[in-house]
Image 1 (cartoon, rainbow over the protein chains, first blue to last red):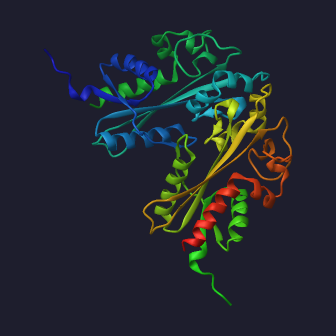
Image 2: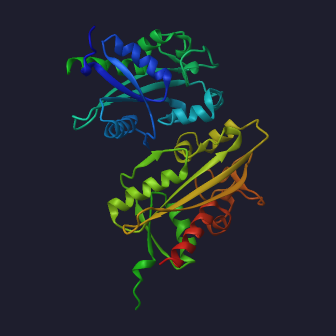
Image 3: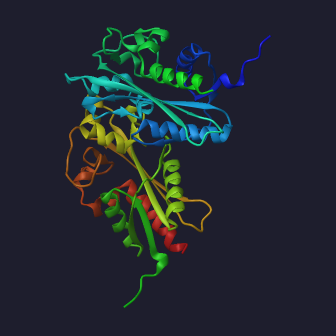
Amino acid sequence: MTYLPKDKIVYFATSNIHKYTEACQVLSECKIVTAMLKKIEAMEIQDDNLANIAKFSVIDATRKCHLPIIVEDAGLFIEALNGFPGPYSSYVYRTIGNDGILKLIKNIIERKACFKSVVAFHSPERVEPMCFRSEVEGKIVREKRGSQGFGFDPIFEPLNSSKTFAEMPFEEKNRHSHRGFALCKFAKWFTSNR
Amino acid sequence: MTYLPKDKIVYFATSNIHKYTEACQVLSECKIVTAMLKKIEAMEIQDDNLANIAKFSVIDATRKCHLPIIVEDAGLFIEALNGFPGPYSSYVYRTIGNDGILKLIKNIIERKACFKSVVAFHSPERVEPMCFRSEVEGKIVREKRGSQGFGFDPIFEPLNSSKTFAEMPFEEKNRHSHRGFALCKFAKWFTSNR
């Protein structure tokens, strides 16, 4: 019987099981074991900058739990809507959803958008959190397509793909997605710095 | 020459000159002098509850400035949009604006909405901030009307009025508005507790 090396465990503070599943798949390829740390009374700040939100959250979580923790914050930024819904994507999804976004850009030809992700890592022995950013360009399609993933996945098609994120199984989405790339950057840094 | 009694000054932490003007008018009627404290690196949390946002901000501001401070947080809650834009009204206004809201409920008959306001007061000698809440019911009109006020004022018409907030001079708006009522509650409490 072998024991899990303690320095290969990372705690992912999230309430989103889809995000957790995506993270497990990416991080396990680098032999990092990811434990889900359900967010309890987690505090998020209002800020137009995803990295500030993620950093604040990961510092708060590490202070409360004394563990090596990652937090991921993502947003969909639509050019024709001045970056809306941006850092408030989760709230906007819960209220007006994909149908609301499609209404807002119904007659708009220019449908450029990008998905941004920031993974912030912090641990009790660190002075400051580390941030790993990634973004993926694409467009908002005319109608929802696909049933996988979550959030705005059914309306976002990355560049050089004919599928929306919701039409991709999660392993495939991870190879194309903002979150997959940011997690990969983190995993490389984490394995070479531990 | 008379000096201003120090205990009649309140500092309003805001970057919004319209809010400040409205507050001055309401508070001056109770002989409270309101100074504008321009928000610098003020922190706001993400929370679906306005009072939590206002409390967090006023505690943060009082800790930094050591003054008696009020913070006001408001939001427009549209029933047919599950409360959107709610606590994120300011961000939503800056990105999709009034036109975005009108698009979202273009063919929706049920146009009930309410404006909520929370005024939070805190000072260095207090243990906890005090909150004063108010809300005003009304509806989203079909087209923008009026050029006064700010934010979503041109599309909100309070119950028992044929004018939108943007069609009212600010003294009149204060007599009908969520912010006016919440400031009034604060003013009454403040003058009787000092």
